[in-house]
Length: 396
Image: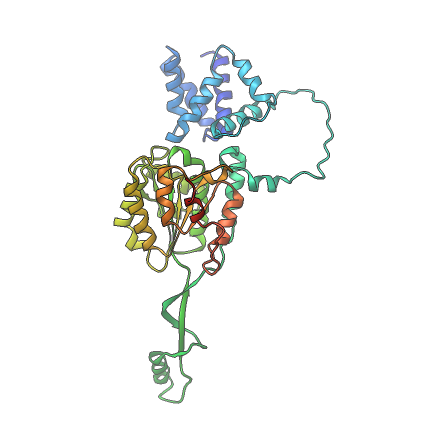
């Protein structure tokens, strides 16, 4: 194989690694060896040869295909690279493309190695916003790979409030109002029947179970991953935290998220979930949860976080029925919808209007600041009425 082609494969692998794919030096050598063994018969053969080596997860296929089309295109290659590196006017508001952002960052870092003389520009940053404040309010779907990693660290560092609730059970309490006769008699036997202090008990306090139901369809992929990092951090500090994903089916990922390393936990979830970045069937998924898991995980005044955009493809009657039963089974149902990030959002979709009457709060979850607000709102003794879903139900 010509040295030029091997060098191009190495540069291509470096761009993929910067964009977020787990590509190491050994993978580059495997790619060169695979191309040598398979030969270069056609463009499709070359594409699938590299795809077999570099792509190890289904969600990386789109990123690889976009990068391949840009990097290995004969005509207009320089125009595409220049269009990525040159500053452009801000685009019209719309749905951001995280794949394009990550590729822009990857090719931009590749071009940083070329020495270019740049004019010195002095900028007065005395009245600008800090990087931390920008990251707090930046949409997850607009973040680069490095910003997503920093957002995950900040979300994992959030501290939950003390939302312990009173249960019907009792625990030893020296100031309790009830006398614990059994413990008193045991003390008396140990002291030989002498005079002892009465043992008392009071109401037992514990944190309520927290159940997270995450939509993993294509439109929710970037938001769900950050939420799963948040759930992983919760599991390290609390008990009775359960996580489920749903796209076209329901999957319990609680055991996978208990791994110590968050990257290993997310990798285990991706391997266990078969419908990641696929379609959405909210009603059958909620019905399956109500039938199989509700009695197991919703006891003790559980709080349920439903993370979805509410865009249901099936009938809304089944969705309303499943949401109503879920609402009746838990103490509090909070709907987290990233579509609320848009100022002109209106509850016009049938799936959204079917879910709204059966939730207690309707919140957005598109950036770090929204996750921090959610953490503060989980305090059971301070119900937040600013996110009442009834005001959205008035929309036509």
